Image (cartoon, rainbow, N blue to C red; front, side, top):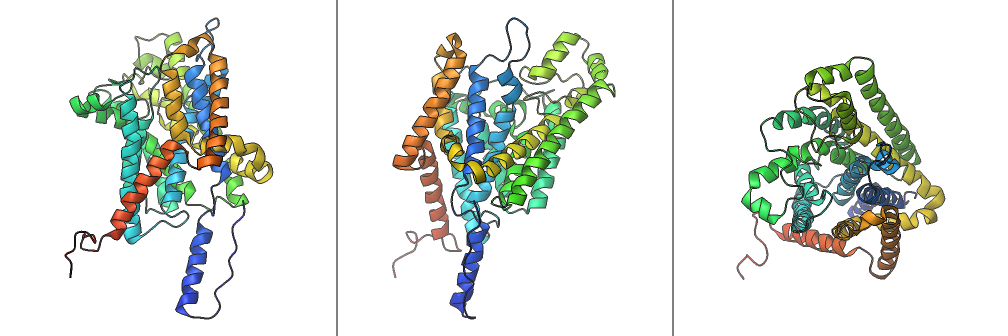
Length: 422
């Protein structure tokens, strides 16, 4: 996709200046959905479907399954990173909203967080066989509100600081906070035990919001870039891949060459080598042991260590860059994946509902393929007939209503309905 070109305003009139500013604003934002972003989001959805449906290891050899190796942790991190990209698009694109428009955007984001978390909490009434990310998403969006106006370098620095520091806070909190108390917290859990639920959403759960802010803020920073630029797209693919490779290599060297593995074994004497190796492949159960901070050297899926967070950020950026580059040469081929990626809230919720009866155990590969095909067909048909996905429409209408309400207020906080008739 290329940037739209607009003619410069003729003359020096106020109307001409306004037209030029409007043209500049139009160029700062994509004029239509970027299929590459949607395609990356669709791949994240398919990866999560595979991880949730296919067994994570071979029962005969005990080795991790290919789907686990390729997608575990990485797909969810890609989801969160692309959520940050979407937040950038919704709050001004390359130039963040200012003034009352930013105030409206912040309230709208709070509304989006409420809708998504509300659906996640409703799913908490079901005994799902997998962990539901939606409630964590709601917390992530709330935490993102103060960061919406920050410039790209500050966002990248903030993402790096969350990746570096939040894992230490997470490990420290596990020594005194309740651990993964609720697999999928619901409204009853939130009302009856709000402290435990909030601490789980922030630090001790499967997708803890504080460490995961590194994904969201990295995505927000990327969304402020010109994603229609080939140079930016190539940079994302190359820099992301390099970051992932460096982090994986640094973790491996720290463990196997610099004595990290031995330090973990000394600090966790109740685990033998086989148990330590299992955590390094499959992550914690569900959290890492807290006996020693040397565990923060590993890069296993969902371990939420500095190495794993940075590695997953790199992979997410690389996948996004590759998908944006592919859009240039294979846009039609990407269309089915992009269609599914345009309505992942709807399709991810449907995926959880399909898993709930746990019929997939008999034929996991068939269930995985069947879900992906069904999601693509549904997305293509629904997109042609109605546009946005069903749940995406609920979010869009809710957030637009909130934004309109905020923008309709006078500086004193009143709305037209509040003011007396003259």
